[in-house]
View 1: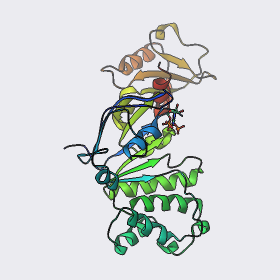
View 2: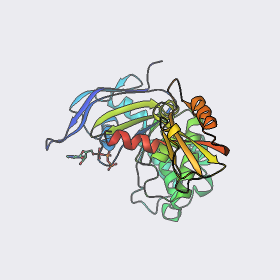
View 3: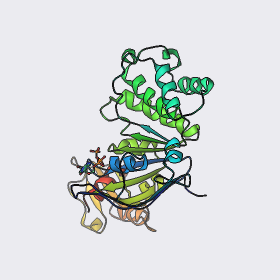
View 4: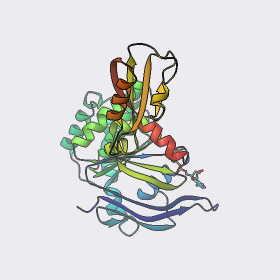
Length: 307
Ligand SMILES: Nc1ncnc2c1ncn2[C@@H]1O[C@H](COP(=O)(O)OP(=O)(O)OP(=O)(O)O)[C@@H](O)[C@H]1O
């Protein structure tokens, strides 16, 4: 299947000589939720701005649904919805006016039934006649999405959808993205919250200093790069790790009540069988055990710090 969005050898150097993007290659598939994860200044906004036609690239090619963003600007722009971080001005406009105006801007024929569906799906229908200033923070964010969906785009960009919002609003946004997934819209979101990528995305791309340093299916990424820890709760506390177990990657909890074994989840041999045997031979008994997995945050920090 050809990608809905294809980015080839994309470069961007700003007029002051700063190279914000270097040879970006990326293919986004129809219907997926793709998280572009990167620290401040990595180039996320520059990349989205190029795709949306707000900033010109210095080199490379981008197509949306097969249309070139430069040659077929109107075609590509009408297929894209951009959800910015903040709602600007127009505090006295109503929700309904805002979404219908957005649709009109793209030259789409009036379709009140479609707009009603979008507002209902985003729990804004009851507020259709309310002025923007009367909306809560969560409603304002959902309105930004409704506005971006008004012209029926096939790709939706969410730029830092939960920057500066509280935990409750953030979770509300995650539910909204789930609704978008079910409605078949392709979603590309930028974030520097790892938790957000982990929660919402099917695939994750990491961008750092203008370069894509990794693109991976989220589950595979967690599996491939993650390590697991096996925590063994000991029947009798230890003061030190016995010499007989020195070959294993073992740690002792501070109070000596648990042994912690770290292993690679992807490796052919985790070493757990051998460890169990060695523990038995050393006369170490345990009362309970559980495993924990390293988070995407650990993986991300490793990548960005270049270790
Ligand atoms: N108009 C410009 N002229 C020169 N440099 C720019 C310009 N716009 C952005 N940059 C630089 O390009 C780099 C990437 O910026 P960009 O806004 O794309 O990053 P970002 O990943 O979106 O960061 P953030 O998460 O902080 O928004 C930064 O170093 C920024 O200073």
